[in-house]
Image: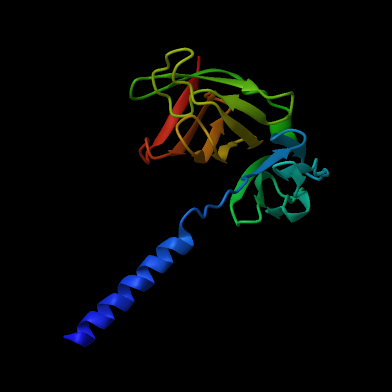
Length: 214
């Protein structure tokens, strides 16, 4: 009985000491921030040159830009959309990332302008407005990539849309008002003045969606 009491007493003392040691101890961390210089989305011609605009990362007032890791690269020789991911980390290991999108555009796509109003040919037949972005060849803003019924000023989903070749359109994975959004397997038909693609987002199915210019 004495042995049981002694063990219980030691365990209680150890637990009490542990609680006293940790009492009042807290940790404050400052999350990193990162700002990309230049445009978040841009395009260059096939065979052109991509020049990195740079970035600034901070932990509070401390510049931690030198610790930023950049993942991805641009191949100016091959048409397509390239995503560069910049990740900053603070002293406690917390991270924050930002992305830049670079389209490498063929001469055929650069000579075209597919901006306009498009209507989905199925479902609710929602309208999508496609407008050029800062006069970059092959780069557009699309306010309704999934072709849902839009309530102006309420449920638009703005994403970057690229036309990298005469018959190819896509939207790289990017943040949106409904979470990460991407459009893959895209094509453009200049004769029918239409495009189609598959939306990658938890709120959308896997079927291709076709849009016809109005």
